[in-house]
Image (cartoon, rainbow, N blue to C red; front, side, top):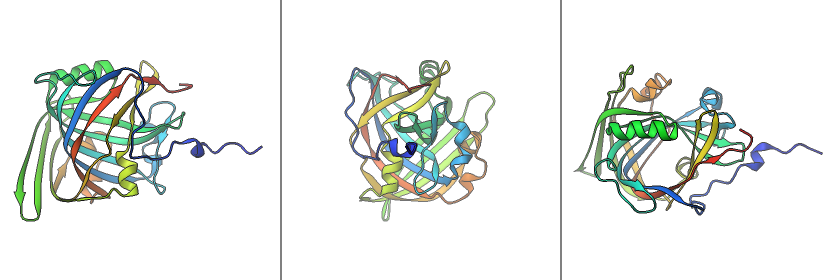
Length: 256
């Protein structure tokens, strides 16, 4: 008998989230979100995955993402909000993953936020690499669209990096297959105490807009091991006004 092709076991890309079953751990709004992505060889990122997780690929490539947004009204449970601490700016560098159970997700190389208490709590509770940063975001109307400006300066010990990203946002557009591959991600993969876990999430399909880069001076991607990548034009750019999302309890990846 022919051995099973492991790729045949991977769940299909679907911009509609699977129904989240079980208790809701937390909820968040993600607003004014910009995606910037660079295509790389999967071998370049394979050693950055948790045990039992490998790079996910689209047309032979995987992607390094720089994702900038405003977290709003985060809280525990399905609808509660944590005043002050639940609203902050975040920029993350992420990879695209698939685990031994065939579930697609993301692996975060960094998550930079301007709330120190959130950074410390997330690092301790979920094993994800949050870092403290000074950050700002602004938007203004320009001819042809709206220009969003994101700034960040790390305040994390031992790492010096800055970021300045300006994008001009245009009209809404239908999602492409690459958009869906990068944005329809219904869990994150992480490792805590030697165990590989996935944390599921659910939200409506992303509403997407055309966007173009006006200015890109980023050191955050280089700070997590990809020097020079942001000196090149992104291979994928998109903007979304945002979604409301809920997260379920962590699940252990089989056999890890």
